[in-house]
Picture 1 (cartoon, protein in one colour):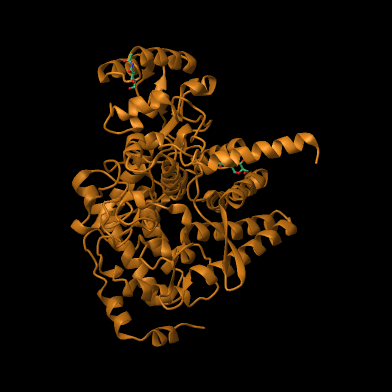
Picture 2 (cartoon, rainbow, N blue to C red; picture 1 turned 90 degrees about the vertical axis):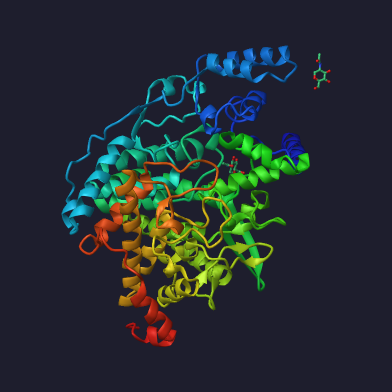
Length: 582
Ligand SMILES: *[C@@H]1O[C@H](CO)[C@@H](O)[C@H](O)[C@H]1NC(C)=O
Ligand SMILES: *[C@@H]1O[C@H](CO)[C@@H](O)[C@H](O)[C@H]1NC(C)=O
């Protein structure tokens, strides 16, 4: 072995040695926004009700100068700076939140997209028109100073304007943007979608993956991988094959990140399977929830804290931050300190990737690259076999997150049906089995939307909250069935969700990121911050349902699920299946 290589190897071992003692690298390089004494002191003083506020402020001078002044201040006070002085320091060296973003009215916005004509119910049609107006409020453009002096901002520069979720979320978010884009395409705003897609592709070229959101403190974690699907929707709408051809390799690069950085092997029944997980091996509290993460770790020995913080980041990467889904590692299953996201193989993540592999295979076929088309087809085949072997439960009729230590987690989550939505199943009877699974789990008795789970932990991705993307996973999954009854349940779930969105909108003139379904349908609660208005993916999902079922949806009645409910209870599964054509 050449000497240079050997030295490198030694360094690597030393590096690994350090890691095994629990010192993981920080979530980004910035000593202001991601780690260090300044961040620690300001966040632990809890100067703002929401920790995100401080890390979203920009600097009024160069970072070196801010750090120098801070170190002087810290020394003057023997590293315990009184609150008042800390507040003055922040006022002097930071600028108020949001100044680096300017409102943007999309150039392709239209007053009356065709979609509106499809909506039979007059009140729903007016409401859809108002949802279409909201895009103008959610449009943002980044000011050029963020490009010229990036070191002064936590915001990551993107050249094209974009649509944000709303509320405290004034930057882009990865998986939110998929439902936003579906809505935008229905609003005939394909140019806006193309710009957002281009931003994401640029991020992949720069960082090798798409960060959770548009801030440096989100850099080392991603979010559910839906970029390939975004491209598919855009191309299906515009037939812009040139754009696809120009960017196919960047799509492949993003999927490669999930393969290289997020694969896990499981051995079962003498076979080895490769699947994916959420996993963020970076330490320290999440900068945007710093004091919460620090307080949570307070009771742990120092050497265990980074592991907890890494699991919290992996939970954030899943998009389900946070949920009982990930709280499977401690004595108290309702405490966030039990989080161990990376020990689970999630159904939804693997279904999203399975779908991406199919889309890539189709894209490459279209572009005439048969070798790559075949490669992705074979990756998909392998993944489907792994899903069947590890996650599918024949008795329950659904897929379940696979806990590396304890096997399948049989709790109800809407994500358990993601393979239907993603078209990632080989046996058509799975769709109707899934209906029975929903029935057995008593999910169809909830009239205001499908809850994120049946466990009330106080976390926001748990009962009684319901989220737009999770309605989509179930509704469009069931709608794939050729059974009229299953399709009817899909429609009625759509009616319930539209009713909740519409009723709350009628009372509050606002759309929300999540809804509390326990209470007749209200804005949701729980978790780490107040419920936010806006709201990108909720609006996108409402427009999708209005597009698909606009001829039947009504504003006035909460349909009960009586009809299919009784049928499913009364008829044995075999009889139900005997109605199907195969
Ligand atoms: C500074 O703080 C340290 C630790 O809290 C303490 O031991 C030390 O005596 C302090 N020094 C002064 C000059 O107050
Ligand atoms: C992904 O893994 C590669 C190779 O180990 C590493 O260099 C890179 O930093 C990782 N990316 C992230 C975001 O962790």
